[in-house]
Image (spheres, rainbow, N blue to C red):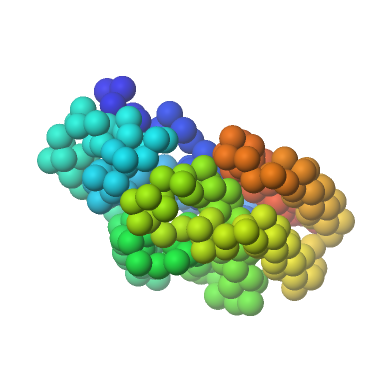
Length: 282
């Protein structure tokens, strides 16, 4: 059981939060701050199941690479503590669970879920040929945003795609921080990453991505006529990003990994801004 928990990364829930926060931003905005309990439960459980399935699929496809990377060589498939056929069975089970969640939503949400499934299962392959797989991850992690809008039967709008862009830039920022920790091993085995592609300008690229994220969120606030609580929390987010910059100034792997983990708080700050805006106006 311990190995299966590690295979699904349930011992490291940071990925669940990074996938869940943008979905909750969208769900609350699409419902004007009043999402149904049913939708909240479906999207939360669906997020946990799809993130777990994505981790299993990633480890199945990357098991030969993972055995050569210091940080991943002890993963259950890399060290062969779990047979591949068992991992495949677990993957199918998780995907069936996610499908059951989606069946409680409307047809439009189901169609978007198929796109999300394709992106999640093909993401590991992009590391073999695409210079910035972190952007592809952002596309995958952002699919909960249009799904939330169509599930609420709210038309897809400029707000939807600005949220999607904000999440895309956010994913590039935090996953580049994550990639810095594996940069040397990735260079040895020929895996692509944004940390390698950005090279000596990785720090600047990370901060530019954060800046674009916050600009998109402020734009959303303008379009949706958000009140002062939203902008207060966005300001706190900007301060938080400034604190992250001080931590990663030298791009030390340990500091970058710690900064990656702390992105959970940034997503939470944005959600609190949306939540308290609707609490204020409603």
